[in-house]
Image 1 (cartoon, rainbow over the protein chains, first blue to last red):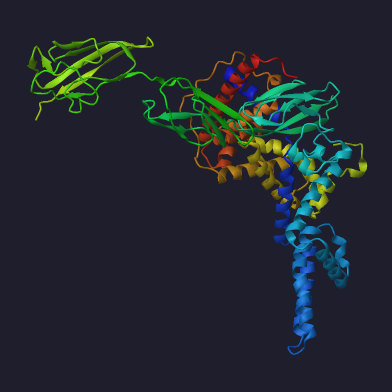
Image 2 (cartoon, one colour):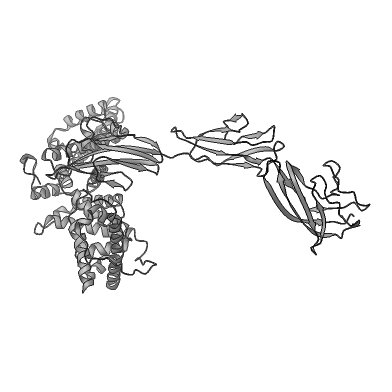
Length: 443
Length: 195
């Protein structure tokens, strides 16, 4: 029982609210409709409405036919005349259809008069049917307005306000400073997110409704709105007077996409100053770029490459600019870490001729006889290496001494060993690393 | 509509006769007089305003070409509405991809607190939005049954579906609508009273 009641309430709600609701169609609908109507009517032959186009067509076709038939093949003047007549008259029929729909009385005019009239039409301004149909389209809403506006029907067509002394072009530009526009907008274009303050400049305190073109609305007199998606929004203000009349005003807000600056540095673990750094640009919605490499140099390229001459802390900044004057920037601070590192190989091939004591230099150890790190900026250091049975086979507190593969004077068994290192860099930053190494038998 | 300017006023009868003669002026008058109302009807059957305007155009073409068939006995506005509704149904059939729609979630009827929806709580815009967001099948049945007042049997015939389908679609549509209105009301609870 209760369900029935609710059911009724729901359908009543919709019936009462929407049963006779009026929604004002966009102005383009009437234009499109009229175009389709004309096309349909033209094709739709209706004997009860013996229309002017068919009359005209029949007359012209008849005239052309008679001229062609009466002109002999040997005569010079008359074929030319007939060509002229057909050449002009045939498009004239089309022209008449689109441009002059209201001239019903013309039916009774003499054929000559019609032809001369059309000739002047053609020579002055309407060479083709397309332009003429544009003229018709423009004329139609004006006509409608003439009917509507003096009667002050609530449904003023949406272009109504723009028609008052302004051209269509002005409407598209939608500047905020228009005199007879009820809306004042703080900005009319900008980048996302665009916050716009709107002021309803009508002097009365009538209720009003703002629609922002993105589904949002407001009933406040003055309001502000945040457009966070790019696009063009027609902000419409409707003011309702107590006697039920509405007035409209609209302003076009253009929201451009905001650029987003993003980049990546390759190689990921670059060694400064040895490696050439490539900057991969992942910015979006941007056209121009400005790179600041942090060492006093800069670039405008999309994806620049750069060599740093000294190791150190570099803050890299990318600023991405869009065509609409918006920008975004991103800074990667301390892009290459401190420039200090410890890195180990994963294999060792000891010298079978006896222990070396673990001294090494980068140049002397080309046969990987000593297990040692490549390093930079290491201050405190402890390296320990364990066998798979958990026996500590090597320990070093000096980064310049590595493992030569000997344990208690004996060459260790080939196999996998585990290493662990910890310590501090010279800037105090601690590090702990571990891994495995494979001890290989010397061939 | 307005009696202030009698020279511009045409009675419905005059308009109908003019339109039957394909007079441009009468057609324009008919359009300016009833397009708002008819778009209101079409919008209930569409997903957005653009689609509603398409239906509106088709409706007006039908109206202009068939106006001589209007008997003149019933109400003219009722006749117009019927044409718009029929056009919307044709449109629905043309764009029909799925015969009918079943939500994946099972709609448990939501607790609405009060048993009826206060009319002043929702603007017609919001109600339109609720309708526009419905799946097409739900929307058709709900409109035809709840707003237009057709019987399920008639709806089944019009849409080419089973009577039981119409009924079940209607009850599901109701559940969705009630759910949406409930959410909307909760949302509006935080809002200051509008106008």
